[in-house]
Image (cartoon, rainbow, N blue to C red):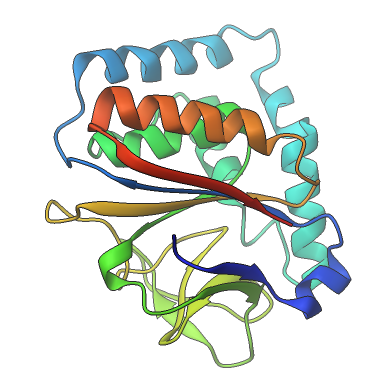
Length: 220
């Protein structure tokens, strides 16, 4: 499995920072009916809440925001990816429909309320470190402009930053040609929520993406 570690400097500011890591061989395909049904059911559960915006008050969202603040990034301007997805659902925009693997990751992110990064292992070079972005660091986000990475909690390999708890880069994004993925679940509130999220992701990747040779671990 790809080596993954948390930088000491980030851990000093966010002592409960933990990562749930799932690496698997997959078959990239269009979203199957069963997964589409699960996505819609998730959307409907939130829509039926008396006050849908209460999902933004969950402990997972709160600790993610606190982690951003501790690193010096404004969580109102740079939201964790889970919060961004939840806000889409509150606005009745629904989850984006991309492909079977990305849709699994988005579903797990919404249900756990935790940001999840997704990477094509073939384009990750060497060990991956979870750290705060440095002054002047940027990358082109997927479908977005260049992202200002300074103080943002991000993932960097031997070539530099390639993903973050807000938005991943084009360099390591999954495509139709991807055969092995690395998904990293980000928790700033400790490891308690990671076991369930890892189990859900493993089951969904196996069922809907032909997941095999799946390696899982928690880094804290």
